[in-house]
Amino acid sequence: MAVFTDVTPAQAGALTERLGAGTLQRLQGIGAGIENSNFFVTTTQGDWVLTLFERLTAAQLPYYLQLMQHLAQRGLPVPAPRADADGQILHQLAGKPAALVNRLPGHHQLAPGLHHCAQLGSLLARMHLAVADFPLQQPNLRGRDWWPLIAPQVRPHLPPAQQQLLDDELAFQQQVAASPAFAALPQGAVHADLFCDNVLFDGLPGHEKLTGAFDFYFAGTDSFGYDLAVCLNDWCLNADDASLDEARAQALVQAYEVHRPLSAGEHRLLPALLRAAALRFWLSRLGDWHLPRPAALLQPKDPGHFERVLRARIAQPWHAVR
Ligand SMILES: Nc1ncnc2c1ncn2[C@@H]1O[C@H](COP(=O)(O)OP(=O)(O)O)[C@@H](O)[C@H]1O
Ligand SMILES: N[C@@H](CCOP(=O)(O)O)C(=O)O
Image 1 (cartoon, helix red, strand yellow):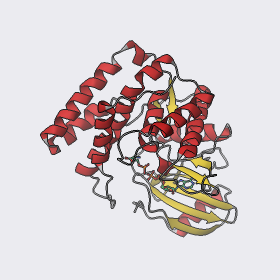
Image 2 (tube, rainbow, N blue to C red):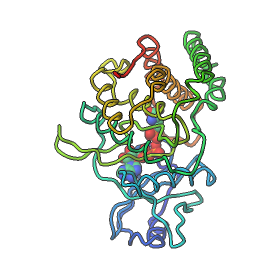
Image 3 (cartoon, rainbow, N blue to C red):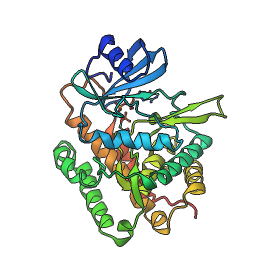
């Protein structure tokens, strides 16, 4: 369960009072998640989520919190960090940097259909448009600069066939990154981890409406096409859990393009970006599997899943209809 640091009701209540968020009524640790300590908080004024940041530093956090604030202020359904009387949105609790955000309604849809994928595509494009005037920059901490750092740490744990795949893919991605088409990709602040378990829906089955997206703590400056690829690799898988379902993938991209048409370069590089997105999560899951944090009480996620996704994207390059 993802509570690495305990918080007492007295500590949480003092924070909600200080932020004018009401008097604490209930504090409950959240089991899901792998990065931070999360709590559902109910006060006399409503429902909130309290997060204590376990790995991100006070220097890195303003980017994520200000990005959420920026998107929420533009009407997008993302959690808005609660500010204190001085306008500060990053707080300190139990010795850790902390934030309090509004709790979004709804539930996860872990088996998304066409209409879920289309709504996700639409939200993603609106997020990409909304960051046009977001002033902060921060590297994607799980981006291309990180891959050569983590790869040699996990490589010795892999059998030869996986070592070969890793070496080949890193070389391929290096080649892609050196191309003028890659340099021309439109970029900005992207979520970079907008999986089904970071999005909520509400409503009757078949008619659900997307109610929110959260967990911006892997966000960073990267290409919009890469962000789209991360989503396609999670939201649009066939029953084999690796190949892309043509109908849902096209629905996601078409809904995206209603708001933000992809450039010719984005279309052309999508197959490579899908491979990049698979590589990124293969690497992070390999890291969690083979180099776990001592305090983590969690079952790490299966790295084999993203190895299979990567192999599938290499075997069957996927293009969106233009
Ligand atoms: N703003 C929010 N509104 C509603 N639920 C949330 C919100 N933030 C987090 N959650 C819930 O907490 C869980 C863990 O949050 P997450 O951000 O994924 O954790 P971690 O960053 O540790 O991976 C989510 O699966 C979701 O159920
Ligand atoms: N989505 C990533 C891991 C990030 O975990 P989260 O719980 O913070 O979304 C994966 O599936 O590997």
